[in-house]
Length: 195
Length: 165
Image 1 (spheres, rainbow over the protein chains, first blue to last red):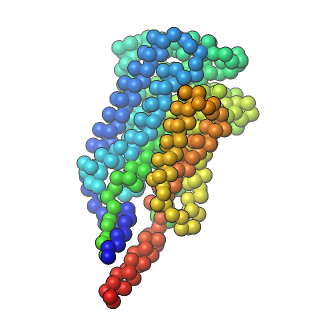
Image 2: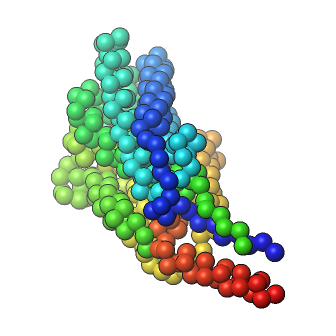
Image 3: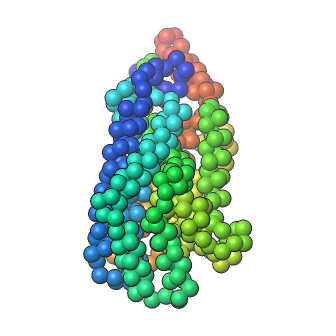
């Protein structure tokens, strides 16, 4: 008769050797690059599309995809860490790894966005024009329309890297911290004791 | 309960997240989408005023679905110690979270294909299911050593019984 007790590795004697920075930088870098490419691709789709007056535009689709992608990065980093370094990872370290991954994504995305403006200096202006043209086609009260234009314009307005970091890291970091803990739950090694 | 420092740190973070997501209406100030508390959510939320709740006539900093997620995360986090103390069973956590994610996708797709028109309230509710599902999923990792020890003792007594046999 076999009975198996399963518990997560929370013992302080559990080995947690190896740096997590490789996983953080690798996954954070890949996700920021993917988010940047998606953003740029949907951005040019927005620029070249005819204003339809629809709520669902390439830019809002881009926001949805990028949000989902960046939020699960913490979990993916923990998965990579458990595969590449050690399967034993404590909850606190998983949370830290997730938070750092969020920070790397915000930092790398901000840098990539700034670099893109060297390639296409009019990019932000073209996006703004396209978004405003689309919102002006929407059937809604003038006040709401103005609010929406402000909202969308603020989302794509050119802000300094420091502002992007200061505003982006806490929220993206916290959300990735949470998914990092989820990664520990899903991927960390479980101690098994067969009786 | 273990990882109490991590628990408290996340509780503070989620409280801040919740308060910031309320936007300027709660402070009786007009919406300013270029202000820092609205800009913080630009990367994670579309912030469409039409799809956001309003406070004092001012749209929140996040849409109804995100607000539902953040509210349920905070509520679940506050309730977590009581849930753990109640001896709640977490075996279905994976299924619950998977269902919550599928519900979000289904709700979004249904809206896209005009199967049904979701309202801000329904979006809030769907988001809340996801937030609550997440807390349910990770809560057992904060369960204290005592619970694990008692489990081990139970198995230990089983082992003794086997020896006696």
